[in-house]
Length: 108
Image 1 (cartoon, helix red, strand yellow):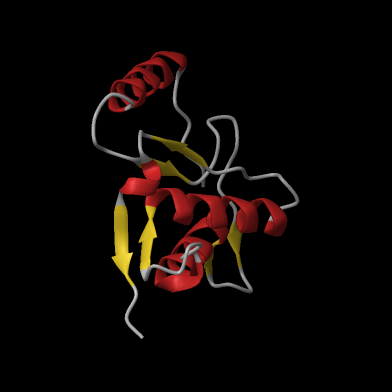
Image 2 (spheres, rainbow, N blue to C red; image 1 turned 60 degrees about the vertical axis):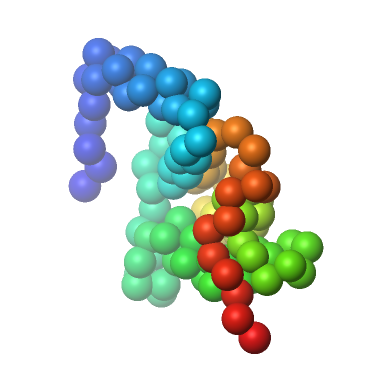
């Protein structure tokens, strides 16, 4: 069941996220504020969670340096989630220098 936020809570959340834009933190959210994150029976999880974990395990290593950065992860995950949900769910990211934030080291 989706969580309903009242207008004031939404404004507070958006302000907090905008303050993160100036820090060394990246925030990846599963969908836009006006969307609901979709669960998939066939994946046995949320669509976003499924692709986030899948891509974090190495599929998102665009440049082949054996590291998955926040930017690479978001790029791959967003595309896959949008395709899987016919654009009904569009992930969002906030942060700076996203391709400089390593999230995983891929071992061969």
